[in-house]
Structure formats: structure tokens, C-alpha cells
Image 1 (tube, helix red, strand yellow):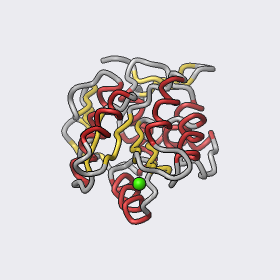
Image 2: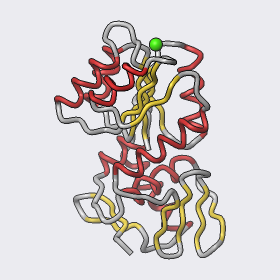
Image 3: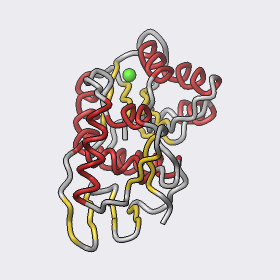
Length: 219
Ligand code: CA
């Protein structure tokens, strides 16, 4: 899963990035509304954390423009303390959730997980498929009751495909959701991650749909 963090306060931005990465997300970040609007318009994210008070273009305007353009990415806004009108304006502009500063990072991460889950119609934070379980809270994966150690990239590929269970996911889409913007994106490495997942989990879990991409079939 890949998220965008938009926050102009450097310390908080760094904390958000570090917490997001520790939670297993690929995190892109920016510090102003203009870059945020561009990134949200051109990159693929599974969720966005959007501060509202931003230089160059305010967060509400960024959010309205995304929604007007039909971009449905889940957005969690960060609002100033005791400013309820900002929350109302944010939700009316298309925000899916909000956090009031200062906040506990654990709560923000829990809300992000819920947003990502709900955006694909899942209710349970533990994803299950046959003998396989993936706990989105802890990042732990088990197969037939046994813990499976995955690298961060293997985990992201598996998590994304499980969130999209039943759908064919193209290689380009997968790359967009498992690599950061500035990462050297080599599509061959996705094949390597899939091959390793098949080896570590089960050979027939991830299907290759010739010419289209990969799919984890509905159980
Ligand atoms: Ca701000």
C-alpha cells in the first residue's frame, strides 16, 4: 500500500513518514498544496494524509479539486485544534476522516487502515484466504498457522493483491502501489517478488493472468 503525506511542518511530516513506513506503507511526502495536488493527480495512492493549512494552495482546495476530477482516494485530513468549522468544511469537501492536532500516531494509523480497508469493501483488519492470514495491524502473515517471514516488498505485493482479491492487477498498477515515487521501478522485480511469495506461501495462490497481470482468486 502506498500513501501520500502532505504536511508543511517538518517534524510532524517526518514522524508521519516514519510511522507510515514502520507500518509497512510506501510513503511519498510533500510540504505544500501545489505539489500535493500534482502528486494526487498523477500518482496512485491508497490513502492520503492531508494537512489543511498549507503553503501555495490550501488543503481544502486541493481536496475539492481532486474530488471534482473524480479522484476517490481515501483522504484523512489534519485539522487545527478547536476548529470544528474546518472539520465540517473538510468532510463536505470530500474528506473520509479527520484527526485533530495533536494526535496519537497509533490512532492515525488505525484510522488509515480502516479507510484503506473500507475503500475496497473489507471490514475485518485480518485478511484471510484459505490457510493464509495477513494481519494489517501487525503486518504478520501466517500460513496454515505458521508465521511466514516476508520482506517489506513481498509484504506489500501480497497485501495489495489480498486487498484486491478477485481482481486482476496489472504489473504497472502493482508497481505503482509498492514502490515510492523516486524508487527505481523495474517491472522485473515484481515478478521476483511474486515468485518468492509463491515459494514461501503456496504455488497456486497468485495466478498469472497472461498479458494482464496477477490475481488472487476469491476463495
Ligand atoms: Ca500546516
